[in-house]
Length: 371
Image 1 (tube, rainbow, N blue to C red):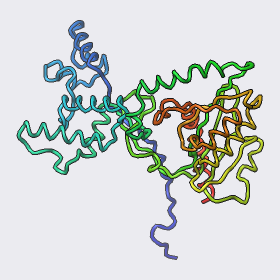
Image 2: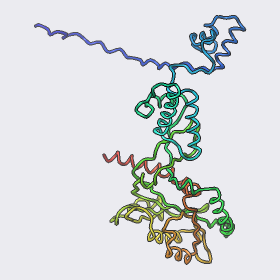
Image 3: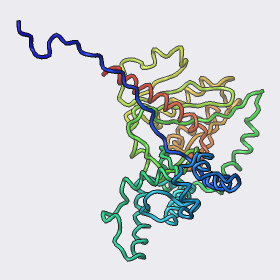
Image 4: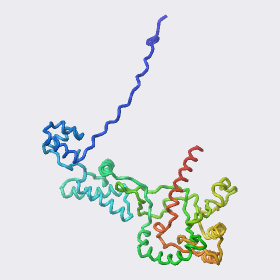
């Protein structure tokens, strides 16, 4: 019987391939170059031995010893911008961030294009970027050379930055000080509550800002209204004091619900309530309902003889005459933060940040499971 080609032969198992470790470029500093040169002069050894003493490549050390390489000089091909121009660009990023005007990648590339155009005009040559914007490759190199980072930044309206001045903030605390002394220690309790509302399930993304290495604080950027960037689906009203936490109130988008979405959260969130609204945001009617919810859960009760202080922002629902009269009748004194200053004075903003991050992660996980 004639055998087919290749039949009857056993295939050898493929040899196991071991991935080679990725070679990393040697890192050295100007001090290492000086130390190697001093070591060679002191011991009289060869250049290769002196270079190996501090782990410097021999070619690099040889160029330095022969005067072909200067201390602090940048290696590699020349960059599109000079060192002076890149220092100006770094100063621009730092100054803009300090003024709450954190630049984006497009802003940095646009500024680099303007600097390069000035240098090209002085050198009487054509610009490197004729399309009017620095290339993406230049941005990657500039980011790596100076250790820049990209971080999500809070988008602030321009009028917020103009309105929140030290004089306005000091005026608020001048009013708050006597009220603090009045409600700070009443029968061993702090009768001061802070209330705020924020969307916790939303569509949209924050902008990315360019910051210098080591910048770990919250960063901001001037932009349009935050409502233009976000489309909220569910909002949460939270209220707390140093001694107590009022059960949350959730505001969902829609005309009504046949079932209570919090029916399975009775143990984890006792007393929480769910209200429907067309915009998923608080309004005059919902704030009046929330006042009843608030008074019901304040430890020690609330009455005109046993009042509490409520800190809140200047939303129109707090300024409604009916709600002001109702709060006074219930024994709730309301102190509003100055307009456009809640990003600096509202303590609830620090709580909402971590909470919304965890909620968004759980929502994405649940959505993936249902696909």
